Amino acid sequence: MPAKVDRNKRDVSSKQRDVAPKKKDKAPAPGTKTVNSKQRKDTDRSGGLVGSDGKSIRARVRNGKIRLSGNASDNIKAISKMINESGSKTARKQFMRLSKSEGKVNFRISKEHNTVAHGMHQPHDISGNILNWDKEKGIFDGSPAVSVDSKGDRYYKEATITLFEPNHERLALVKGLSKEQAMVITFAHEVDHNLNQLAIQAVMDRDRGIENNYDVEAPAEKVEAQVEKEIRAHLDSTRTRPPESAGSLFGLGL
Ligand SMILES: [Zn+2]
Image 1 (cartoon, rainbow, N blue to C red):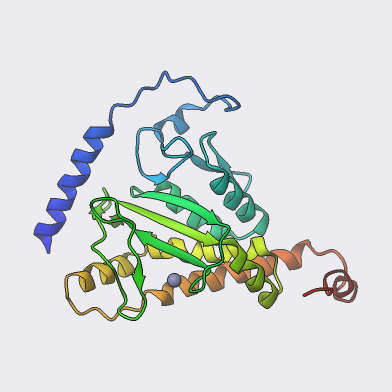
Image 2 (image 1 turned 135 degrees about the vertical axis):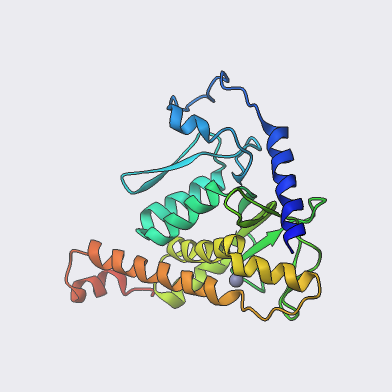
């Protein structure tokens, strides 16, 4: 096991050499505000959420809201807006953890209805193929490329997180929340699959044929429940009317 870690560590450093140094004199994209030096440090990396230009986006929190760099894709902008409006600190934290992670993450919102899940987390293999989860076996249909960061945490070198928007219309009705709030809940769930160390270990072990019965859904569902709790608390705090009149306002169609 230690030998594997060492090899992965070498992977990381050679990868870092490949991407550094980055030009700092690049003109900002149109519409981008001038960045301060603290933000600029974040451009010297290739991990985190992939922007519309294929480069890492920069994210920071100001006054409790996520702010994004100009290269954030429409999908990333959309989910960060949903998170900001949801009032969930845990969802915001999940977003920020993802944006700061060393692994690359492609994020997309699909307009298609999925028959299996509301959202999907798919690591890529060493050749960049997006892997599919076999729910029955609890493994992916290939070997995810995993590396180790400077803190010793394992990370998927690249992954794709997808939210299926139409699925959330129904979920929203069931939960009595908006579609956007439901999507924030799923997002936080999928991020756990990408970053949870025990889940990554379980996926790696099973891929190698080592028995590991860790339930990867349990921690993701815990995060999901916490986000939902925070969204409901936020709704309660922002509703100024008493419950009776709120009922007449929101009751229709729920
Ligand atoms: Zn899951």
